[in-house]
Image 1 (cartoon, chains in turn purple, cyan):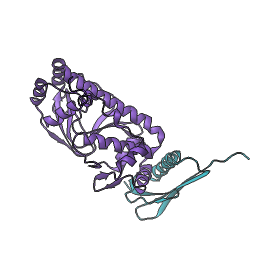
Image 2 (cartoon, helix red, strand yellow):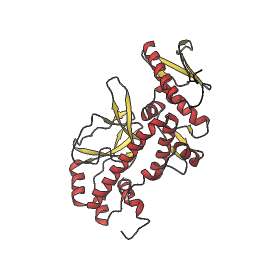
Image 3 (spheres, chains in turn brown, yellow):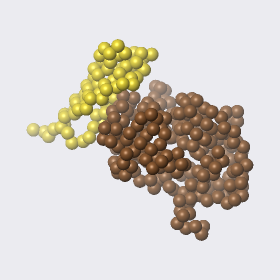
Image 4 (cartoon, chains in turn orange, blue):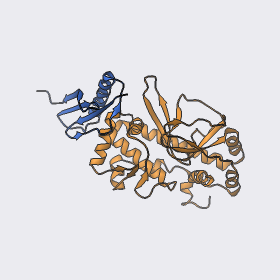
Length: 244
Length: 77
């Protein structure tokens, strides 16, 4: 549990031993959230939610009932903007698959950020990566649904691989087609066409809640996916310049 | 809520085996319209004529709505 969080942070930047120790002493009580239900603050009103397992999303529902999924939140991610102050955006966080989450008090986050500059910095890098992902999605929507969905699959593969939750070309994928429709912003009927198109051209195999990408290089080329925007943190540079 | 199945014909025939829960035929027609509009927008460029049809079946297999969209793009004479 703690290793998942520390691993995510260290993906963005190296931590010192006292910083790792401080994270290890966090009280993380896992609680289950059923699929298709909102992830609220649990019993800890002023808290940030850490996803331990499953896939969650941030979403917005417009007055006509149209849902748009804004971001996908994976194990090791913090649901909120890593901010010590509560805020509302008029959008919600919900579990798409069954999830396990832990609540971290906002004050604890604030104390960690205040006391440990490298923790503050890694949270900042993670926020920038989230911004990068949002921008990439935004830019991608204008290219057509097939390429946009291909990009989302490539991105999920890389993000899940970084957490040890995907092998070289496949991962467990419990989302439904309606979920995917709301991720890429097409109608519920249109998504069927989009998924069929990727399937029939052999770019993806999706069955029994597992998504397999038979030729990763080919899907990446089709999606024009460059993972650079995901490996944004100093943790990625550390292997090049270990003297930091 | 009744379930409706939206089969897509756009050169390929994509049969809808999962279906969509919708309250009434008005919602079915709206969904068909949204689907046609979205699909034509992302059809590969470079063809002169694009025709997309969506046939909607109810749970008994009876066709209840058919919707089609034709786009013709050609050089002026």
